[in-house]
Image (cartoon, rainbow, N blue to C red; front, side):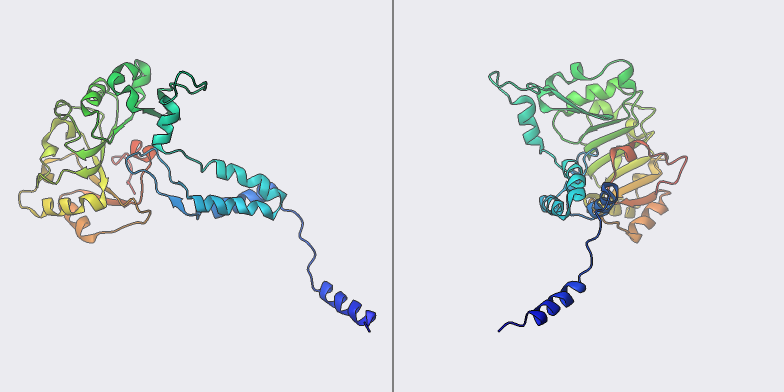
Length: 301
């Protein structure tokens, strides 16, 4: 026999402790919540050879974001923009879409030769042989402040562009100092060049003899990888014949760690200080930060 009254009472007691459903959050509030969550999510590292590159969300992070759409309508509306902003194509795939189409394929991006972002110009390997013809001429070229060619390929071709822009650009990003800079360019005096950035410093030369080249006469900031160059700088500055004293304009060395964490090396800082050079550590640097470095007017970091 079932006691209906007792069963109903137990049901009432259980239901009475359940909190009423909360009202739906506005999309604007959900967007703020997702933004905080988004900032701490796992990301694929940015390409260190491209200062315009940004770290995109890892696939596992994207999957976690997409699963949050089940929380409600506001979440389902707010999440897709965050996911779409985190989608990227690898370089090889971009080239496939850009210049890999055959004449039988109809596509609005067929034979696309140049990709442009806001204040960033990218020239694919397909145009290297005609790089000078594809490079902007006239007033537009005067607005170019940072020139990057971190790959060792096309150094001689890029040298022509550097010569054409000798009076305008402020920053240069190369793969290795000085081997990635063509000999004719090393002999140039570039009046506005203040910043040189590189992934490596050539270790075959025990002293930075490259600082004697005319192109380095106006350079005030050198940016390079901490991991790749720390031993080089330490050996060079502990030598009694240290050539860092031969670069009176050089006042700052920025060491990038790439791993997203700040680093401090007291020994290296002291060595640079003994040469009247300030040493700075940064986890990353965007192309905007490279362009607008102005050590004469403000403290770097």
